[in-house]
Structures are given as structure tokens and as C-alpha cells.
Length: 184
Length: 184
Length: 184
View 1 (cartoon, rainbow over the protein chains, first blue to last red):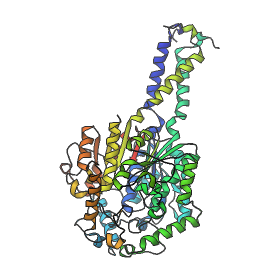
View 2 (view 1 turned 180 degrees about the vertical axis):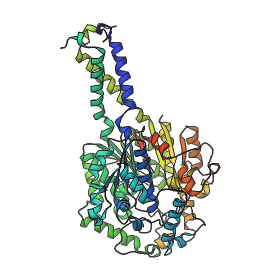
View 3 (view 1 turned 135 degrees about the horizontal axis):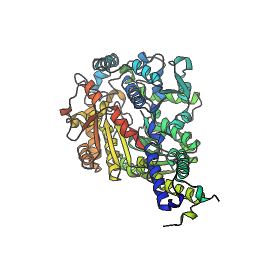
View 4 (view 1 turned 30 degrees about the vertical axis):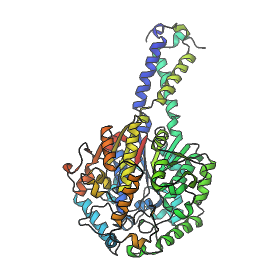
């Protein structure tokens, strides 16, 4: 134990600054990620799941709030609901250039969806099903937005197991404690 | 007043850590939310307004920066400007499945817009007008992006009352103090 | 040097709170911005570049993670790849109203792209090329997502100079230290 007589104001300020610097390095907000998944097409289902599972793998506490079209991702029928529309995605790299009138033709959505699934699986990227499993195993909190469920007429039993239900207040309560907050 | 002789270095470090833990719980960044509203369709007008008013209801200081197509939301003609295009929203739950070529037909945008308004009002969700009123009443700061206004040829008097005007620097100045920062 | 005898517990707590308040004003997370650029059309190429260069101009350390369609922005052929589809952007202010079936017609994407470039240049907004140059000059870190590059079949030499390569873990490692985190 040190002699208190030596604890001058300067020495104490130094200690304080040391402790503060250490505390900011461990800022609890650095350990938390809150993602809002709002889109319900196949391509936009990947980013929230990839980022949340990567955050969990890095030791962060991650949660995803599924709202609006994003509810599709945790719906039991996600395999059927998650599609890619080539019309809405002019940026999607296509094997051949196609005018918009062609991409708007019947069947093109199925074609684009299949093509994307194929590209991802060829490259060894996990499927949505696999990413959801990893998310649940690694304790990513999955929250379905109760308000949008009501608007779209969905009931709780239509969602995959492991999903919790909550509103914007629940999402914000996590988000305000997190550095990483992304609306996807 | 305590006897200073008992204030050893250990005891002081303990006090410092106590105060720091308390301070992190009250981190001012937890109380601030900065949303960027960049989309100008009816469906994407809801999330920034719902999240900002929910943040204000939770006692947070919220601001929304309306930029790019998001300017539509605070334009005086927002009722006419905010539409839903079924082509751009293949994820939208439709009462019946429709091929892309049909959703691209004249009249479908009006149909989808009406359907969405109807779904929301049936479920008791506030209208955009009501959400804007709540936002203003609860002191949500509404900033219209001056740069995009110039590009699109809008003047300040075309926007609803209560809107401020600023640039990316103003948006960032709020955002850097906020845990919750979302680009919608 | 002050007399230690006067350093009571109260006085020390006061010092601690002073230092903490000062430290929170300089929270290092306030100085960092991490943007994820996920869209590959001309209109959505502007926001990440404008926000990142504005952050750098405000003295912040900014980084952009280009992923999914956002890879288009830093691809050597970005001039050709970045287009605006009028179908996917029903919110885009058009000189005249057009039904969806017309905006889906061949040639409309080129027309909308030219119109947007023209609107931006008339108003003195920097081009994507200029914004990329400013970003690089002002030390904005540009990271291309290696995983999406693999999926889309891109190689490192297809990207503009100054771009680094990394995965979601690299993006999160920056994001968790930043108040400003935006998925664009």
C-alpha cells in the first residue's frame, strides 16, 4: 500500500486518465451490433446474416430486427419468399446484358433467383438456411417486428423457431447501446 | 468529510472505476439517434418516421436528414409523391402472385400504393401525415439536404413547416455524437 | 503541487467527474465513420462517397467497405457499370410522368443515367471520378469485399488503385470503433 502523502493532485489525475483510457478501449458499445433487416429479396437476405454471424464470431453480441419485407428472412417459407427480381436489381452482374423489357418478362425472377443461388453455392457461400442456423447457434438475437407482422397479417407460428417478437422500442433499446447499428 | 489518510491508491482507483462505470451507463451517445432518409417511396417513408418518433418517445434526441429521394417525405406534396412501385418491390406481399410483366403495366403503381395505404390504415398504423406531426411535436429535428434540393431544383418554400436546411456536414455533426446512426 | 491533506474523497470524485466529462467529449468513436456501400447504381454511388469525404473534411477517419453491388463503384469500369434504372427508382424526379411500362422499355436506363449525370453536373456536384479522387487524397480507406468479389468472379486487378481487400471481419473491426456506421 502506497503512502497517501505522495498522492498529489497531479498523480491522481494521471491515474484517472489511465483508467479512462483503459475504459474507452473496453467501451461496452464496441461489443454490440444491432442490425435492422428490412428487405425481403434473396440478395438482401445475405448482408444482415453474414454481418451478424461475423460479429458473433468476433465475440460481439449481435441482434437482428426483422421488419417490413425483412420478415421474409425468418418466415418458415423463406426459401420460397426470398427471390431476386432482375428488374429491381439493374446492378446485378448478369451473364449477358439484357434490356429492361426482357428482365420484366414472366419467368425472369425465377431465372435470376436460380442464377444467384448457383453463384453463391459454387463459391462455397453458406445458404440462407445455413446462415440462420449459425446465427441461432451463436446466440444472435433474432427479433421479428410485431407491428409489421400485424400489418402484413402474419402470426407468430409462421416464423422459424428461435425468433423473438418485439417492436421498434425493443430494437432501439439494443441499438442505443451499440456502436454498430445498420439499417439493411 | 473522510480522513484523507485512508485514501490509498487502491481506494482511489476503485472510486475512479466506479465513476467510469456509472458514466458509461449514461454515455451521452446512447441518448442520440441520427437517421438518414434517402428513399422517396411510400413504404420507405415509414421506417425513418417510426424509428425517430419511437426514439423520441424513449427520451432520445432524434434527428432525420432527408436526402436524395428522401426529400419527398418532407415535401409539401408528399401525399402525391410517395408511391409504391410493385416492380421495384418484388418482396411486397401481394394478394395474388403477379408476373413482373403485369406489375410493370400502367396503373399498377397506383394500385400498389392504394393497397399499402389500405393495409396500414386497417391495422391502425399512423399515416405519414400523422407521423410527421408526431415527429414535429416530439422535437425530432427534420433537416432537408440542401445539396440534393439544388440538384433536384427544389426551393425551401416547397417543404413542410418545421423543416430545417443543411448539408452532409450538419448531418455528420449530429451522427458522430450518436450511437444510433441509420441510413434508410 | 497541492497539499495532499486537502484531497478529500469529495474533491477526488469531483476531479474524476471532470476528467470523465472531458473524455466523453473526446470519445474516439466520435472521430470515426464506417460506411458500407452495397448498391451499384449511379444514384446510390453518391451517398457513400459524399458522406465519407465530408467526414474526412470534418477531421474524421472514414472508411468505406464496398460489398455486393457496391463493388461497381470501385471497379475500373465504374463509368460503364454505374447506371440508373428508372424502373427500380420510381421516386426519381422525372421531367415528365411516365408509366412503368414505358420506363421498362429498352433505352430507358441509358436515358435516366444520362439525365442524372446531367442534373448533377449542371448543379456543380462532383462526378464519381472526382469524388473517388478526393476520397483517396483525403485518406478515406477503401476496402473491397473479398467474399463478394469471389462470388461475382472479380479479381483484384479489376479495381482502381488505392483499394484494399478484406472481409466482413475487417469491416466490423472498423465499425465497432465508430459512432457513424451506415449501410448504404
